[in-house]
Amino acid sequence: MKILVTGGAGFIGSNFIKYMLQKYDYKIVNLDKLTYAGNLENLKDIENNKNYTFIKGDICDRALVLDILSDCDAIINFAAESHVDRSIETPEVFVQTNVLGTVNLLNCAKTKGIKRFLQISTDEVYGSIEKGYFTETTPIAPNSPYSSSKASADLFVQAYFKTYSMDTVITRCSNNFGPCQYPEKLIPFFISNLLEDKKVPVYGDGGNVRDWLYVEDHCRGIDLAFHKGKSGEVYNIGGHNEKTNIEITKIILEKMGKNEDMIEYVKDRLGHDRRYAISNDKIKAELGFEPGYSFESGIDATIEWYLKNTKWMDNIKKRCQTQG
Image 1: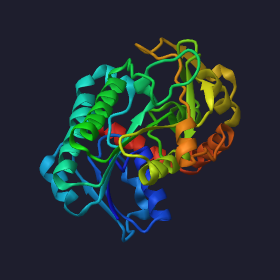
Image 2: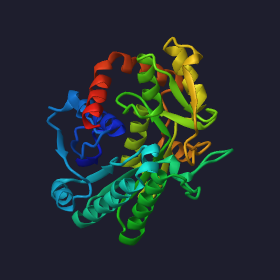
Image 3: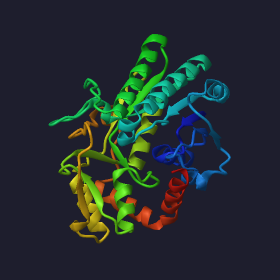
């Protein structure tokens, strides 16, 4: 089998490619535009793997995508702008990549008769929930430009299943954490700051709740959805590790030997959803998924990775300075 993985130089995509190459004898083509969050260092250990090919390019480039798909069997679409704060500043960029890019991939897949199209989405499309859990039948109600763009992409994927009988599957995950995550996200950002003895900024009162999923568990869930998921279905992939932002902050502080005077409370984000929580019941019952990491084991592995890979972090910071 040959799979086109888009956005494979990013955090989750790069972890997934390495996971798949280790588990299967598949050929994988990684198409990535290498925007600020795309980092080929994430894939340095497999760059010479005979089953791996990297192509720099844009998922909106129809001619390029059609050419790549000439001998591919499936698409797994990770490519996306994903940072909520950036979406508030430049929502049009998120529409271009997350919506129009996905539609271009769908059109190309339809033209080439691709066997399976797997869309990697997010629990943020459901909006905020005070009690209980989002299920796959919960109506989508996005609140940020980012989540709105992902919700729109999901609707197009479902429309291509209904209208053109394309073999599509959507996965929606909770907040990921683990190795190689770009340091604009909460956990690597806080680790990075603390390594430099800088304070960590916490939005509002720190009471916003997220479910946390270790990236390797996410990769296993995607693998199951790709191989065993029913066409036209949505599968939530969660870790059942609900934590408030301030809880996460204090855990990181403790594990890195810092005290709470390193916390700096800042003005809350615009439209900040209070709580996300998704049910794993469907993917567990139908596909046999179970998270292998607790939050504690995952955060230990994550902090250890960043402490051992300070050069990786330094290189990102240098690149940001060059670009900025």
